[in-house]
Image (cartoon, rainbow, N blue to C red):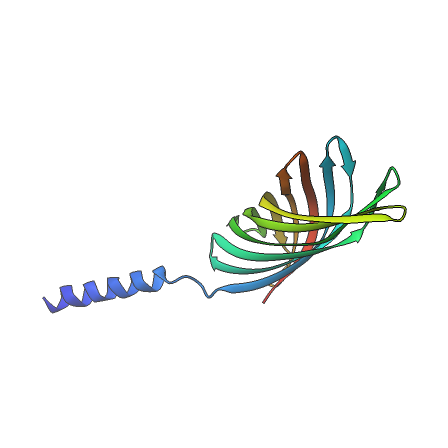
Length: 172
């Protein structure tokens, strides 16, 4: 009976040790976003500097905060358009293939402020929407990685904002 109890206790301890998730990992990422804003058939192409801070809560899921600012204005038909700022939060399901490559999705909410000017006239507007995307990353080593993703930031009221971002990240 003592042998059975010892074996059962050992199996329980082994199962508990295996069930423990790895220590959560924080990471930061910065990238340049090539944005296309389709506003009623007119394509605007401002550029963004985007930063992400993430926390791996599970091997297959992370939570991210995003902050971006405009670094390239669009000038179409004499109208200067700039993304002043954008911020949001994401859930990031992911899968690591073990060879340095990881695929991921993003689902969250983003709020964006855009400024436009024409001559002496100017105005701004801000709004938020559901945001989603897909991407791939490659680990150069344990800390550094590169990432490429496609994200839909906004899609309502006949305005659609999407972008491709090329970034580099660091795991803490």
